[in-house]
Image (cartoon, rainbow, N blue to C red; front, side, top):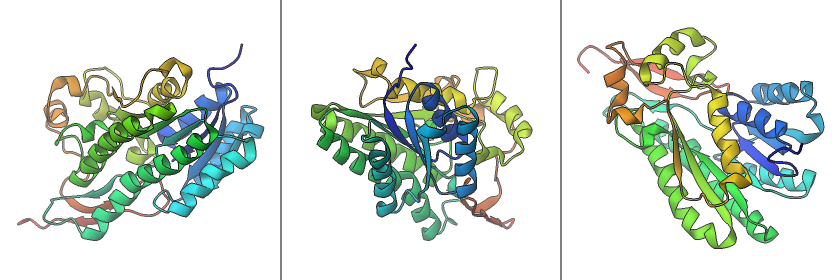
Length: 294
């Protein structure tokens, strides 16, 4: 029986870990060919190794990619075309935690870094995917990772929340522009997902936190978001474009500021600190404690 993505070619940014890795493996299992575009060579190659163990070695390729650099995004997309002759899906998923701390203490450099990865990276992915797909003349699908933090003001740091809100609106605007070319553009808004981006190799404390974060009685897993991405990449989503699909275990159903309402008074991660979180890029975060009067 043919998979739901049989013969399709996809590029997944941030494919080295977490949601990106889970989606890569799910797309491969459904018949797709996948370029894993990730900043971290170690995690990117690990994803490819896992794919090869499953027998997908001839349908997966890793390319080190900084999504904030236009030439590198172009190279990743062109690699798919050169290897497999076409491009059907781009999943703009690469992300970092970015700048955090009181708004009075966040540096311009950390703010700009956050937007470069989370917003410019999505813009570049849409721009160059659309160019290729329009030239092919057969449509395509673009998926962007947003967040429930982009839907309210209380479920993430300021820079991260603002960037994810920008991703949602960019998704809607470009969906309108690209609809005549049968190019679908959608966003996924995950809630708390147990990925290396947040657990840093120690998942159990975060698992307990995330189980309090939403009504659904288990922590979100990368595979849960991969399932949503599969739907959006498949022909089952033929009439779906301009959507921001929430996958959060019911967190947003609890209303605004769900994180504080549901966390049972326990401290939020990185509370009392200021700095920048560079995620799973392999680069160290910058953490600075706030003094007592700040």
